[in-house]
Length: 100
Image (tube, rainbow, N blue to C red; front, side, top):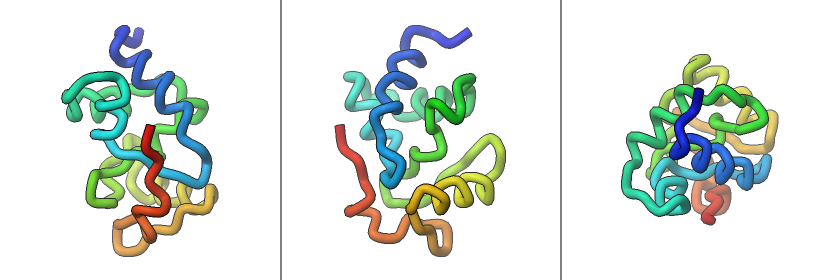
């Protein structure tokens, strides 16, 4: 069962549109914390996927980062939504970055 913190993260993440990505740090700031790693842990435990699109969360430098179902699956999901990835990085990262 998700914690109150995790539920806040999941609710906030639902705001990220299909053709965008956000970062662990952006999500943390959006809910008023600096606990970026806790955001990553929440993504790893996400019981609501794909309704809560944890695949849209990437590292602050545009790297894809981890994914419970594997990085290739994360890249595949992003590509289906119009986010291109090359050598493990989101192309046009600044244009694709969703800020809250």
